[in-house]
Amino acid sequence: MLTHPAVLARLVEEYEMESELRAAGPHGPVRQQMEDVVYTLCVSTGTCDVDAALAAARERLRTAWFDDAEAVARGGRTLSGAAG
Image (cartoon, rainbow, N blue to C red; front, side):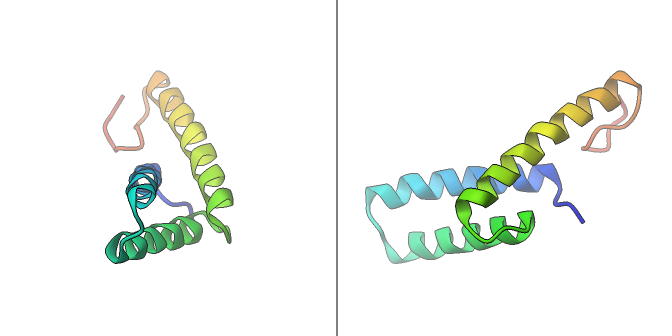
């Protein structure tokens, strides 16, 4: 089962925000949030480390949005469920 691209996009965005916050200073809640996002990214992409998870998520997003555009061009449904 593949994770929905919108979920992956949100996770990548959260990871990037948490990385910026962590760079400013490693606080307890930020650290836990980062660990949670990394764990969820890894589970969602079937990988074991954050670099592989980010690469897999970004590749899935790249191909998902491409597939979505093709569906719209064919008059099909988009990933959001709206008719094209």
